[in-house]
Image 1 (tube, one colour):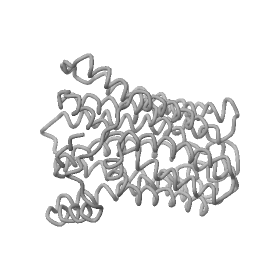
Image 2 (tube, helix red, strand yellow):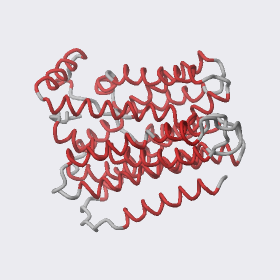
Image 3 (cartoon, rainbow, N blue to C red):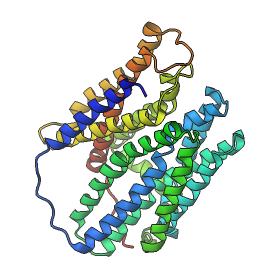
Length: 388
């Protein structure tokens, strides 16, 4: 592997370590042994669930290319996955509340393992089915586990303040460390062990099976409050009323939707952008670099949010401007540096410039996603947490 990739990785490690190491020491919350055991169990399961998702990320596009599909075919597969997540994301939360969050978490594992199994087939219809299953699983991942945690935390009578401890550790592990390690493992399976681009999906299925076994052995079931349940249309009407009655909620929704639109476009296009003429790039290692850059952005976010005199609404304008400029780098690389990239070989000079620009965008992603949590908490009215 080229020294350039190691150099970028090393710079980001130094930045992230510097930001984390320079944080002020805060007093740790005094918790109980029972809570620590509960927290550690959840963090283990959540880390395995996220690893099952992250292991697949680096080689989705590369696998479809390996099967001989062009950018248009691959784009339709990605749209199927995103569309499936959009459709099922509107109902999985209610279904989990009604039929049980533990059951929904197990369903996530089963559905995602089936999605991984479809990657062994080069048939387009099978791959399309796999993308639909993956979209359903993604919806479950970002609803069922958090709902189970909050309900179980309350049922066991733990201090509500302790919930922030679990969430912060989950973000650090699941969205940071586990993502980086998953990229490195996927790269080792494909590049070092030469097991082929489907190997990371098999590894993801094994990790999901292990997590499901822990859920079956240690998680009790909990449900939403039946007296507070609403039909799907009633939920849509309540959401529409909240948006129409508060301009800030509407603007926040637009900001988040537009940014995530650019983020998912990046997810689809980073592989062909860095390897436009089938250049050999270490997809897993590049993915780990991106996740490290995102983790750096999250660390920077924590530093800025700790300063109450800095208004989020003001400095986020600069953050979005930086994101827009970073996504203009591919245009510069294509029209100025390399109008025609040579076939094969390693990453080109234009690809190196784009990788640096993409790292800047990932730093912004880590920054923005952390701030979105804060802004939603500030502007969107939270529903009363239902008893389990």
